[in-house]
Length: 291
Image 1 (cartoon, one colour):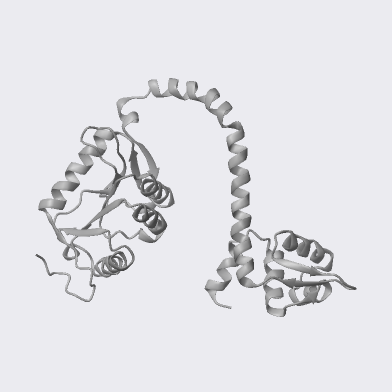
Image 2: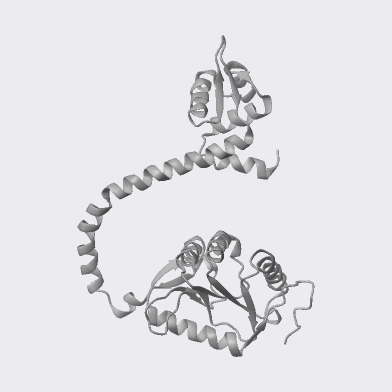
């Protein structure tokens, strides 16, 4: 069984026994509960409950008889049912939230507003999240929230795998995405190779994304969306360059202050227009070629 095929079992929210039983059923086809228990090592006292759970989830069918037999649905049908199950769970969750949303908002908005009134100017400017999954989660949110444009300032865009679905979402909605990277000449050999791979990925998977590279060292890196010079919109995430600090000790600043984001964009725009050149999307070409 390939790793990619096994990956689906981890997405089905199954117990270990349920996953083992379903996988064995797919290999065996139709079989009885005692035979399946013997094949998988699942205790006979548990096997019927396991099969009932798989049946309720829609992953197998029960064949009446003495003894009853169990047969898995086609793999494609199992995958489709898994999506439908998750959709149904989400719809129930959404309905539950909507049922109490109004009361929740009425109860806590006044309390929250009192707290906002007491914020210092610095606290009102940004809040911080840890670098890693929290900062990647915020970056995905920025891509999803963007209405017009996303600007990325990064050394190599090495976290792209964590945000690719969000990039796809933004691009498919017609959002402009500009990416400014550090010039390969300023990178270590490993980072240079990684950046070349990422530039190729962007060129192939997201051809509408514009990528340039800057000769300037980047004192900060981050992502910001929908800047407005009239200070009407804008959100962003940034982190300063701290090579001596390991990532797991670093934090990123998240801001929803439109004037601060406008300043971020003006800095980005200066580099984009005057201190950068188009990136070569072909990693086999020389990284030192410039316009």
